[in-house]
Image 1 (tube, rainbow, N blue to C red):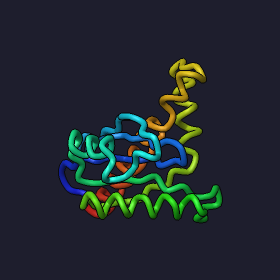
Image 2 (cartoon, rainbow, N blue to C red):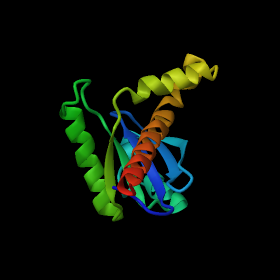
Image 3 (spheres, rainbow, N blue to C red):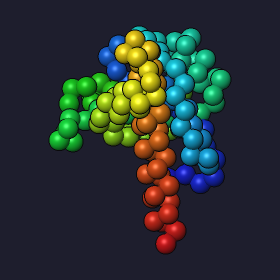
Image 4 (cartoon, rainbow, N blue to C red):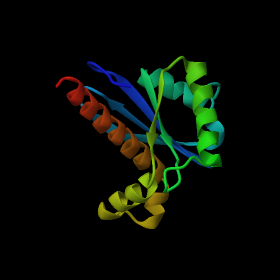
Length: 150
């Protein structure tokens, strides 16, 4: 999905136990780790998720799509798609998927380089991974936009 102008975006890294959340803005190409939700709180009816939507007023959901290293879809891929489609339908927000392969490993590397201990990382990896997913989406969208203007 290409964009023109400024759009607020909420990115989700949906895991089995936790969901990393990041927020960003397409005009400034900013992607910031925001929070982590328990996977059970990832529904449009959940007070925690509703609060995220109300507080950040996103215009787009970017969902990390877990593919195998070879790029194939797995059972986890379908679980994430099902969850994302339910959220998009309930919120009325457009939805795009972004390949998330190795985002958690990259998040761990970033946090390690920032001097975080393993204990500190546990509470941050998923949100940082969501911000990396969002960053990849923003970079790809800018690239597509540039190619389209040639």
